[in-house]
Every structure is written in C-alpha cells, then in structure tokens.
Length: 114
Image (cartoon, rainbow, N blue to C red; front, side, top):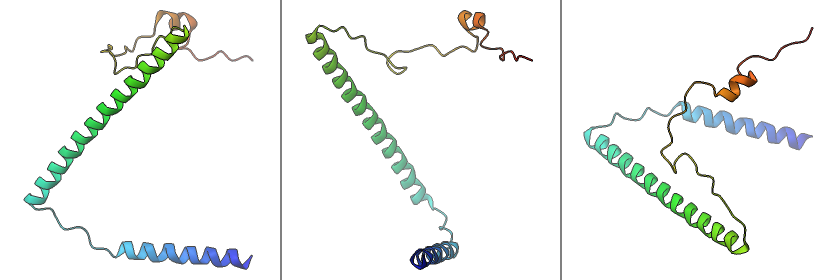
C-alpha cells in the first residue's frame, strides 16, 4: 500500500514538474523568409515522399493480389477481385435514396407500438 502511494506521489511530482517546465518555455521565434522557404521546401519534399510511398504500397498490393489470384486459379477456384474506389473513376454518390431503400422505408423512423 505504501509503495503504491509513493509511486503515485512520485508520478504526480514528475507530472507537476514537467507541466511547470513546459509552461516556462519561451514561444518560438518568428520565422524569417529563409526559414519559411525551407519549411515550404520540406513540406513539398514530404508530400512527394508520401505520394511515392502511396504508389509503392499500391504496387505491392497489386502484386500480392495478382499472386493470390494466380494461386487460386491453379487450384481451380475463380476469384473476382473487389475493386476499391481508387481503382476506377467512380461517379460521386448521389444523395437520392435508391428505389430499393425507398420501398423498404429505410428513411423513415421505425414505428413504435403503444
């Protein structure tokens, strides 16, 4: 019991000290033109790296899917891949409910029994 109490007090002291230290830090200095240009360059470089990583991930997923489909085809199983929204240029979804949902009354609240 006393060990737990000591641990809690120590944790509280660490948190309070950390909060006090953070509170006393001065604000960062304003960026000059060179720093702004460097930040913009870094932002563009990070965006290009993220796009490259995204493309590499997509290629890797395509290779895995092709391998899986080939393995299943060798076993005699027909696999139809589920294509995501990035695979085709799908039209944006409309806000109109489909006729099936309209008939089911999905837009209406359920009736309450009294």
